[in-house]
Amino acid sequence: MYLSDVEEGGETVFPNAAVPASQSREAGYSECAMAGLAYRPRKGDAVVFWSLRTDGTLDAGALHGSCPVTKGTKWAATKWYHVAHYAMDGEIPKSVKHVVFKAPRPPAP
Image (cartoon, rainbow, N blue to C red; front, side, top):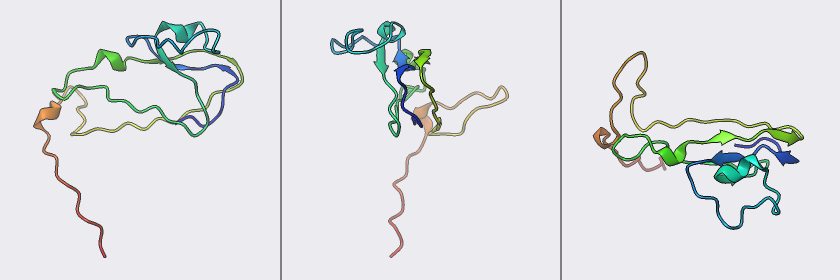
């Protein structure tokens, strides 16, 4: 989630995704942002995406980075979500297809 507005630059860019026609230098995007699909930070907005496919393999389209801020300051908060146990210290991660999804319980009256 973006915690501040940025005057210039600071876009989140996905270089493995195509640049849409509406994204141009004339529209105010930085040169860095033209490397792929980009989102300009706006306070209160969030960029949400999956980094894994349903078979547990990495989605190359999720590769992303941040363009340099050329004017102003950028503040952001990151929240990671995991659908299964997160592998650490050499553990072998489970693929998403092995996760059993259960419907949440209804709220208490």
